[in-house]
Amino acid sequence: MNDSAKTLIEGLKHAIQTEADGYQFYLMAAEKTRDETGKEMFRVLAEEELRHKEFLSAQYKSVTDTGHIDANLELGEPSDFGSGIFSGDIVKRLNESQFEMSALSIGIQLELSSIDFYKMQVELATDPDVKKFFNELVIWEQKHYQALLRQHDMLKEEFWAQGGFAPF
Image (spheres, rainbow, N blue to C red):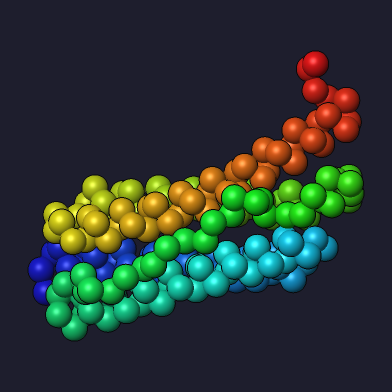
């Protein structure tokens, strides 16, 4: 096995563990949030992390068996979180939503860490298929990151306004 394949295998191992951690975190967040829409959205995020893990595991098997990623495997499209992570009711009980705010903050950091890791793998890769592979993962994680960040920023602004912290 060449050095490129060895580097790819190490990257895949790390990525598989990261996705497994994300899956467990989003499952926990789904169980603990009191917002029904939030429960569903965290479940969707958990399912997507599990799909990532399965995709990465299949690629790991391909690399260990053949020395190359399987360009025929597809990740699919990420979910659209345009309507937000939580229902509008969360604003009414914002002072009681510390867990949800913490879950958003942790999720943001998990996604950002994944984005950074996958971008680094793109830079390390010499094979165009491997670059494409990790770029797809960057795009997926960026969509999760943006959805979580939008919701966090909206709730933060509302929290500040309710608390009289807004500078206007």
